[in-house]
Length: 97
Image (cartoon, rainbow, N blue to C red; front, side, top):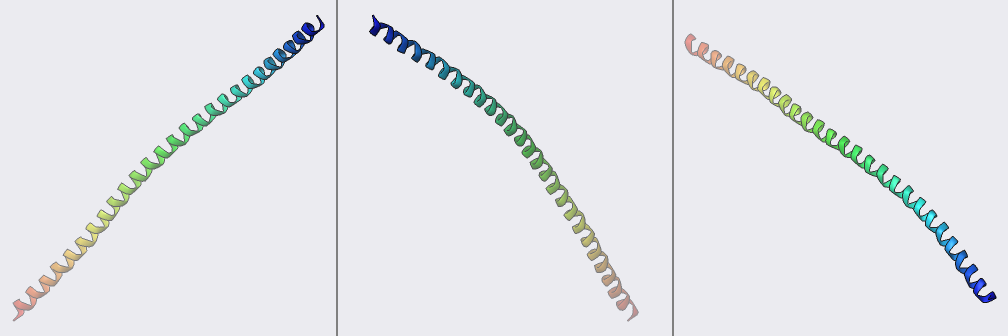
């Protein structure tokens, strides 16, 4: 009978150890799920921030293109005005002769 009691005690001890181990693993698993959820939220926030930065960059690039176009128009208008003055000078010179 003593061998059976010893076997039962060993079995009971191992079952208690397994229950404690299960509780520890379950707690660790919950912590890991919480950590994964936090990382998912951080990834989502960073993705939104990236999308916003990309949109701002696109708008800035478009504004820069418009600014260059405006500058080109101003330069072109100045060149045309100079050409008109040169043509007027030539006409004046030809009229004087």
